Image (cartoon, rainbow, N blue to C red; front, side, top):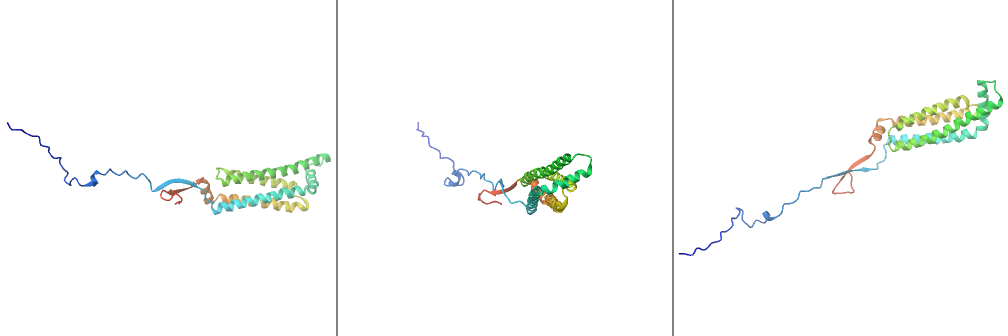
Length: 210
């Protein structure tokens, strides 16, 4: 009998040979970075027409404040004229009744002007913060200004100070109306509807915005 020895058979080799090191390298992971970064909220200056509207509102508020001060200063001069205006409506009352009615009319107009000023200030701040429906409230305040002007023109704006009071009422209302009309143009309307200014930022340069 002849001894048979097991012979080791060589492993099969690839056609390109075992020396190819590229086949033994692990596969590279795919790049998960996106060339476009996430959108971020940025602070941008308002458009030109929005700035113009804001400036007109500020001028209207300043003229309204001057009107309130002037209206209070000429109180002693205007009260007798208000009494005569009330007396012309009904002359059968006592003098004390006319004096009380004149005081009520004067102070009613005075406090309405102050309340309107503070309300318009809050509305202007809301307008610059792009709140919805602000323009309608501003429109209602202008209607309130017209109502106060009609009452003041009939009862208060009399005598030597009457023309100045009427001019100041008209100046305040005209500036407010101009501001509202400019804010209702397409550019300011789009600015309000956008609510926030958003830009995209590249991943490679975090500080740069595109």
